[in-house]
Length: 334
Figure (tube, rainbow, N blue to C red):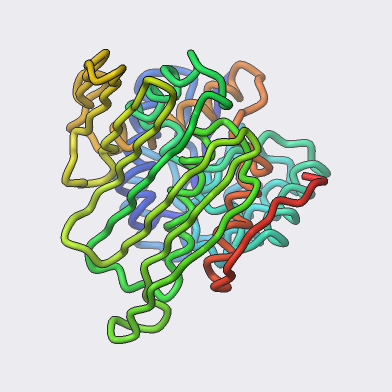
C-alpha cells in the first residue's frame, strides 16, 4: 500500500530545506508517494510541485486532505498560523510534522497538545538542530556520561543583519538545542537584554543564565547583528570538554567541527563532512534527519520522539523573551 505524503506551505524554508528532504526520502523508499502540496499562492504551489515531484498542487489544504487522504502531513506555515492550522489538521485525524515553534506561546502550545491527544495522532516538531549530524554525534558522546556530569553549557548564537522585532521565534532553536544537549529540563532562567533602538523596535542582544534540574548551568548568548553567522556550543564536564561548531545554513563554520578534549589532549576531532554530505544544506543542517525520522517512525508504527509536548518548555522560555521578562522558574507540577 502506498504511503502518501502531503505538504502544507511551499514558502522559502519549505523550498530550501524540506522539499529537497522529501524528494530524497521518496527516491529511497519505493512505497512513498509525494501526493500533494498546498499553498495559498497557486503559482508557488505549482512551482513546488514541479520542482520536487509532487503529483498535484492545491490552494486549499482541506480539499487536498479530503482528496488525497495522506498517511502523513507536513506543515510549514508562519508561526502566527501554526496553532490554528495544526489543530485543524490533527483534528481531522492526520499524523503531523510541523515547523517550529509549536505555537507563539505556552497557551497555543498546550492547545496543540490537547488537540493531538484528543485525536490520538502522532506528531513531531521540526527542531532541526536535534537532527543535525554533528549535534547527534555530540549527543551520542554525551550519552556516555549522565546529565549530572555536565557542569556547564555555553551556546553562542550570532547572526548578521537580523532586525526582527521578535527574535524569540529564532532564539528558540538555541534554547531547545541546549535543553537537548543537557538532557534535563530548565529549572530557572534569568534574562538580560541590551536594546539597540537605532536598529529597530525590540532589536536587542539577549543573554540567558540558566540552571537545569540536573544541576548543570548554561549561558546562552543571542546577538542578531554581528559580523558573523555562527552557532557554537561548549560543554564542560569533569576532565572533559566538547567544542561544537554547528554547520547551520551558510554558517562561517561550515562544514562544522566537533572536538572532544580530555585533560588538554584531543580525544576526537570530527569534521562535519566526515559524518554527512556537508555540501547539501538540508542534510548538514538536520532537515533531512528530522523529516526522515518522522516518516520512518510512522511507517514502523512507532511514536515519534520529538512531539509537541517535548517543545513546550522551550516555547515558554521563548515567550519570556518576547515579553522581555527577567526570570523564568519551572513550575513544580511540570
